[in-house]
Length: 61
Image (cartoon, rainbow, N blue to C red):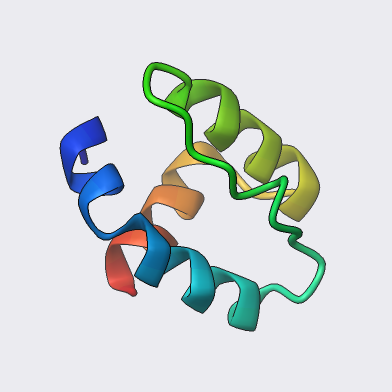
């Protein structure tokens, strides 16, 4: 998944992630161009899952 794919439908994915993981906040899901890896790192830490697991979840929604 590249930044364009993530950015393109991020608002929709963000809503689904918040439904699936109630602990996530708007700040956790803030996508800034060029900071995809930083955001993914924060989500991994907060959800205690690997990067691969997180990317599979995002791609599945």
